[in-house]
Image: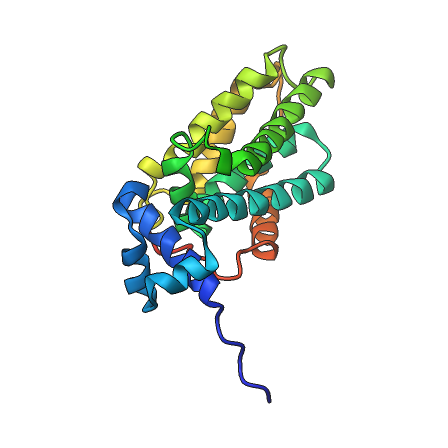
Length: 227
């Protein structure tokens, strides 16, 4: 039997950087910190990444590619806009637990680096994801499932609920990611569904999201590195 493949140094460096940024914030992490945690020289890091900014760009880019791959897969397999909106909520909340370090590192620095040229591809992916969610709501309005809301504003409401939960969500706390997602779905859909709405089936949708996240997981996930 062939020996197991060695972990890529590039992957180890990015994983360590992700965890440290999640714990401390970008400004408090130096290349020396990353080098010490991976037990390599600073020169080795610079062999793989031009500078600290390129590490952040790769962190954000990898994160958005995972979320987009999951979202496209989930929306393709669940055409109903009510299900689709719930799937997005479950995806964003399960990422808070199952892709924890990358999610926190992404959220902590997303505003500061929104205009940096190195982040152009990340901005494009963020726009693509936002458009996916806005279009789900637009389809729900057109189908008569949702009330006549502004889809862009409703999408921002969803992102505000889910994306900032890293500031208070504790993976080992009293509420599970699934419980929070279910409550968010009820709150959101109570305001969107027309009178006489529908019974929600969160367990089925949570399972679909978990399967998609597993299929698109990072090679070296840092999911449980930050509590």
